[in-house]
Amino acid sequence: MEAARMYDVHEVKTNFSEILEAVARGEEVIIGKEGEPVAKVVPLSGEVLRPSRGSVREPVVFADDFDDVSDDHGFAGAFGLLPESADAEDAEDAEDAEDAQ
Image 1 (tube, rainbow, N blue to C red):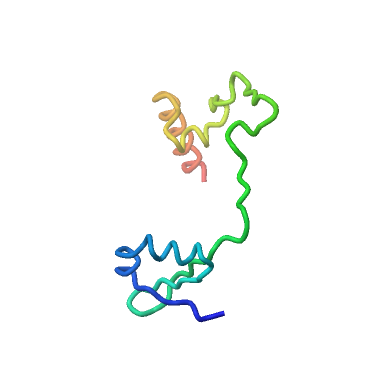
Image 2: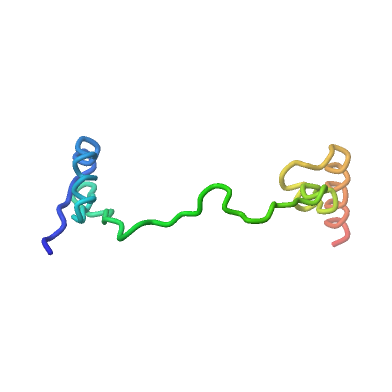
């Protein structure tokens, strides 16, 4: 097998279609930046099997409260999902805990 040819980023941008065709023919290509190799593009071996849309056999069922974070104040607070009064209460609780130490 012959050595992989190295292209710089500008060459790849300019000749992408041709480089992709070379890879499709089985060639390996190295992409470099400032003369240093940074990536290797190789042809895929065989067909890539990907599940298609709708590949789940059973319907997905979510509980009515799947997105209810009211009982997890740590999570809800981290994402700003607590009501304003709950945020104030949590802040007071944190201050009380610090004062107790």
